[in-house]
Length: 397
Image 1 (cartoon, rainbow, N blue to C red):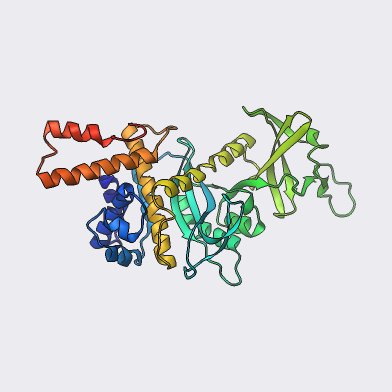
Image 2 (cartoon, helix red, strand yellow):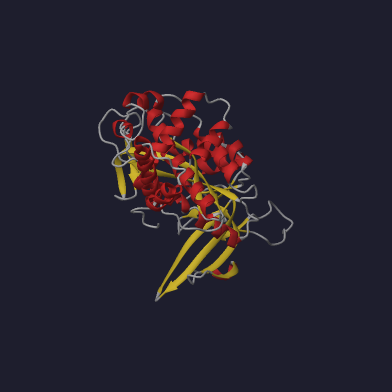
């Protein structure tokens, strides 16, 4: 881990030596702490004081550049990426935190008071793994909708996304709004998302011109039950859903879209899911693959919340909260890369962040203990014991 982080920091010429030392120490602490990742508790697992953490959290750091360098230096140059965006609810007590508001909490199924983290990630299609690029706290700004803020996050990072070869951005049904889709398209990206099952769509007219008046554009509203025969068929998925596709017009988005309908029958009931892309030439099966890959961003939130203290920051300023959220997710990136390098495998692989945290804690504790006892790790017997007990208590040794 030390060498991975140090190499990425060395590529950032704008970062001075004291800040590099702090970031290296911070990411190390986030892999070994027990309990909560607040300033006081993190100081117990490092040589930095509580005030040191608080002071450095107030200083800006380019995490999006750091994450970009991590991926460029440690993943193959031919890695195929798509982007994914999603937001997650962050619990927060108190009444004076900047950005405190009512946001949708998926666990509770309703809006609750707290914070929200908007994450833009890169998804490696080959390994089916998402890596954090940039996370921001959602702040309500007068005269600007939250959807516009999410779109701004994508457009501001378009140069980094394009450098990684990203063309498609995937998102769930919440982002299927013209105020989000249009700016993202203008930035040079096609969107892959989901529509309501009763979306208002129109068939495109493909007949001949009658020779009088304005040329006809549409052929009526899409009826998903009665008009199944008008779709092009693309076989079935493993789960038994039939795949139907057609280029149609979306009244919501004011544009033509590639529509993919997944249709299944269970007993006497018929169900469907509607996926779409603003790229009307995208292969329907590729569209489904991209949308399924979007779900990897959910595992990023899960691992960071459960093991790396994403929700533990007790600071009240936006600058410090965003610093902590980005540090937590960047630490997750480092652990995923270290796992990949250790396995020397770039395909689909299972990783246990709980096991990695246990190993890092064991190694940190043994390293400090051996230093105090004056034991040399270069000794073969000591090195064997160090390696053996690094996985002590890990789920997957």
